[in-house]
Length: 314
Length: 314
Image (cartoon, rainbow over all chains, first blue to last red; front, top):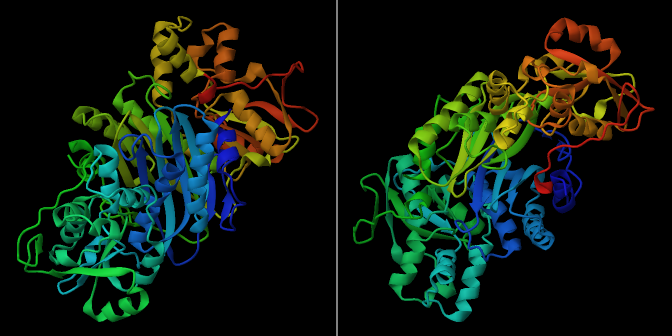
């Protein structure tokens, strides 16, 4: 099968939206650009055996490949519009491709993010997705805006995905059997926090998505903003699944575990009540920003070392 | 070394241009969008051992990974602006990375195409580049505009890269030793025809870049335009290197060989003299378009079968 037919057969779900003048079928895609917007773009690659266990269902791989890129747009306060797919496959496996396509389609349609182009090649399984979104000019959320006195917030719950991965890779027995399924779902189907992003984008002073673990990603905000933070560990939002664990286990997952894809953001005290009235049920205050703190400390003043996942330090 | 540092160290060559508000260092890149333009984007993946021999110098891999994507923009009549790099590496090899970066940088700077983001992952060597360019709204060159009576033109010379590859992979002895070096350079360092694209964009009725071989890529124009073509095989532009070969060899390379990255385009008879006065020394008329022809025929009326490179039919 020719690669053009492969994209046509498995990855053409809908007619192009009005803002897409040309999609797969020419040398490049053409998109219309609205006024007073900036283009926001991010690319992420998932490699089998590195970013997901080899046994991961194809549907989850398709879903997650787009989800992690959409999460980057959420972290910028941008609205997703288009994406491209660079898919490297060891072979043409029709049922795998159908499942992969279904996972991708579900999320793409949910967020009206349209596939405008792709490239399929033969090789070890790898998926690169580049998303493109739009933001009002000058209004993107950056890592660099955190200010002394700001409160630190996070969406959802922390550590579930890492607990699920720990069970899969290391057969860790700390999770009860019924909690494993929940944590694996959180690992395979992370929810890009685009709804929350839209609600906070005019209220947050800085934002990042959690891909490498809370401490490591928080340290990116702190270093970009030249400031420190105090974390209240007792306030870290934990799922029912993780609340059944001993503190040392749940804290390790929540502080250093990757793959959460929650939003970590700061907001001024003035914006806090507006934030809580909009999405108080979806966010948790876990600390505060202060200029007299170096790095990250807990409530007792103990330094918390940022650590996290690094592909080349395994 | 952390992946962020990897991009900072090897792939940060210049300060961002004015149209880039945020580049590597946040969750996504932010770019300004001008009025009355459309965004044109294309993604290409190169896999070691599939798209280039494993022995290919790192500098050539870096150069070519961007060149093939820029060639897609040239085929659309678009001006390159930005690109992202998804780089998968088996290990951190500093001298390889320096050479790869130099090859990429040379071409990026030449065409003022700025690296706005990237992702580095661990795995078998693979490079995905997505280029983004701009075109005046509604003015992109498509495959679908060829009309009966149009003349068929091509830039540069045909078949050199495939002759170089044939020597490398099969130790083919048809090329004289002094010609091999030239053909390998054409294989490793294809020139994206952006200068020619700018000169023809208001004169061409359709356009494609030659990546899979003349016959196969011409068939894409014909099928998109619902029309046929007559080729004058005696007019195919051949380099000095290929002119030393027997006709059957040079024709095979020129008609079915991939990796030329020349532009194949059609132009109306009315536009022909303007075309020739602008870039008559860089283009060759190789045939014509006619509605009463099915597929591709030669001057004697013999049908020419399109064939070419297909990753999944090896």
